[in-house]
Image (spheres, rainbow, N blue to C red):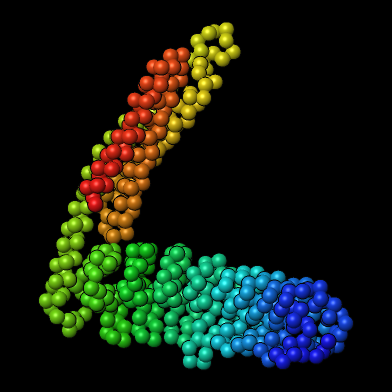
Length: 470
């Protein structure tokens, strides 16, 4: 049982690697005094069980073996590393309870088990470790010259829940900087984690991070200016009182200078975020410091953006003009569908002796059921479209590209709702007529066929438009 092959594997190594947990338990019970050392790949049976998530085999080794070898395995990783990296939460918690100090051991990359648990979002494991020793949150991850922290790791992953978990145990860790003096906002922006940025800025305590400079002198606003995701970042950061628009990095550039340098290097001007230009243009000329660019190039860029600005305004006007026409249509649809709900086809039961007095006569007909449902759908969609146009009227003069995106999205949603309402109205008309003309089947079919021609007309119009666009 203690014999090893050319690779240093014992029988227990092979049993665990092959996932034969019953065999592994039997072998451990037969020789509990054996330490089961590492093979030539530095893998112990304990490491393999943790890596494979074999909880039963892991329990047997930990409980039965008197001195199981838990020496560092491949890449200097402990069995706890292996369980965490492969997201075997039960095995990780079991190993941590057996030997809590394992979570402090670092691998060749300088990452301990807590760092990996934070990155992978293993909240229960992180809670166990920090509940035991809160100072673990301060242990750096990485090399001596290039390291990060648990908070930066969570920011890099964009995990809001993990950040809240870290703050629960160490409320002051949000102020931590990495080896390059970057804070959590720097890291979130660099990794395009803008949902996290929005979450962080909900609390005023994060405001102080907005003007922190890294070792290159860049504030979060500098990094934001170089990002293609400017429009996705909340106004709270762009207009934060602590976010200094006149702060200079080590290249003597303000955020606006960084934005202009990005524009200068971009050959495809259409790919530039319109929001970046429109929002930074509000800072004005004094948000920049003179640069040694070719004046003609700068004039060309300014003219190009001026042209885009005019196109921007023209497009807004066309959207609002179309919205006015569509609003009339939506209002008519709401009125018609509302009236149809109270003037149902077939009428109402007027017999004073009937238990169904005041009820619709055709309630037992399937066509009538379809009529009522589609009429309700048309009414709801039309009302939704009117609400969208109401929101557009509130924001009819967007001051930023982000506002324009909202306006455009509302216009699209309203148009789609109206189209759906129109389709529902046609179905309601056809089924309502069929329900009332059921005793004259030929006439009912004729009317329904004529009504359904509108679908063919829809398709024909879309075909003509699509052909013209090609």
